[in-house]
Amino acid sequence: MKSISMTQYLLEEQRAGRINADLRLLIEVVARACKRISIATAKGALGGVLGSAGTENVQGETQKKLDVLSNEILLEANAWGGHLAALASEEMDDPHPIPDRYPKGEYLLVFDPLDGSSNIDVNISVGTIFSVLRCPEDVKPDEKAFLQPGTQQVAAGYAIYGSSTVFVLTLGDGVYAFTLDREQGSFVLTGLRLRIPEETAEFAINMSNQRHWEAPMQRYIDELLAGKTGPRARDFNMRWVASMVADVHRILTRGGIFIYPRDQRDPDKPGKLRLMYEANPMSMIIEQAGGASTDGHRRIMEIQPQKLHQRVAVFLGSKNEVERATAFHDGTAA
Ligand code: AHM
Ligand code: MG
Image 1: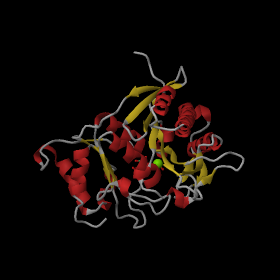
Image 2: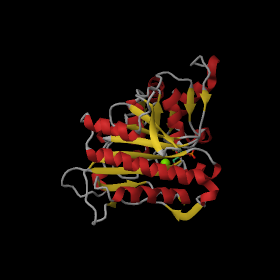
Image 3: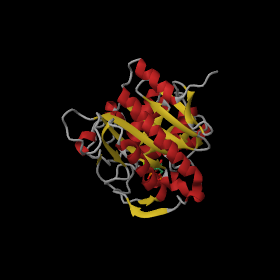
Image 4: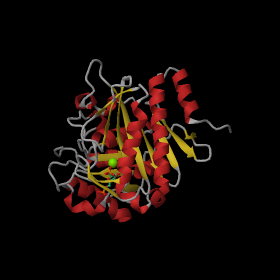
């Protein structure tokens, strides 16, 4: 079978009138940046990219060298194309305007440049997550312009830097996967209209936080752990990579449920993951593949963001299991 490159796939989407030239360029530029991040990640110790950068981001997390480098790669790649009004990132306090010397476009790009940073130094999969929004007309591209619910995303995707590098994309009509051919240097279409099985017997959660969870969450997981002799009458398997991209990629491939629940450690942090550049893009991908995504109460993509770096509880994956877990929280306050 003749292989189809991402460039060809995007050009065909443009010819069919499903995307415009600017959105095509935007996706190509993000994919090119991901290729550079993939190369830097794969060099590991030889590239001098491991370890801490000695700085903190707006969330008070210590930045790794590769967090900082990946952020710079994405900023630099996207500055000059004329397709963006502004960018925002997990690693920057405020949105980053396009420099005055370059033309501005109609799109906003928001990303987590290197998700799963705690896995960089131990050679476990990490990734880049991104979301594309339209900048409202005649509006300054400041933080307010970004505060749109996930249903407004025009595209979303991630790149996983694992044993192979895979770029997963949705333009709002199905989910497509492209594997990086390292010899050719290009992304090749390897997954068409991916679908997540509705039923699953696999869950992903950081069990070490169990004592901090709310009661409905504790009950739901207790039932899974009870296995064959419990109320669910079957055994469940558990996986937790601690890289959201890797856990989501597994779920996209063979099903499962991923949960990072709200907990009682810090009342200012309803969950760990960030709405705009982790939960929303992953929710769009999961829903486009036939899965579901909630915060335990409502559909994540319908949440009106109040802040760029807002956190949210995340339940996503196989539809029936996400609905069951969400039902445990019905009637309890969000
Ligand atoms: P990061 O963006 O700083 O890397 O944090 C997000 C990551 C997710 O990829 C992952 O699901 C989660 O944090 C793991 O958290 P924990 O270490 O609490 O299990
Ligand atoms: Mg992250």
